[in-house]
Image (cartoon, rainbow, N blue to C red):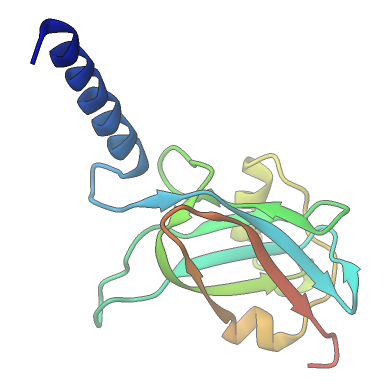
Length: 154
């Protein structure tokens, strides 16, 4: 191996380590970007809060921070973690997703949304989505296709 090959190999190793380090965190959690759309009765759901809560991995162990987003006029959202640096991501793995309108949401959660510079929600969402939630798995590479198609009669 000559000097150029050795330098190239070191550069590849450095870039690989940097990329892998950037996707994780100091507490061992892996994060990925998540965005998508909320649709109610075939129409974009504007100003709705969507919360991704990592599923528990034991009786008392939560597998990471919650991520939250608010839909725009096209029903589109982007998630941000609610702790630390509020990174634009969610923890990789299984989540319970709760989708809520303003009349269903508590004051602290609305403040969280406002502190992220997001709109306050207004659309009504059926209780099944706001209380029980639905399951969603965040893939390792993230997704921009987290689509929730809701019927108001559910």
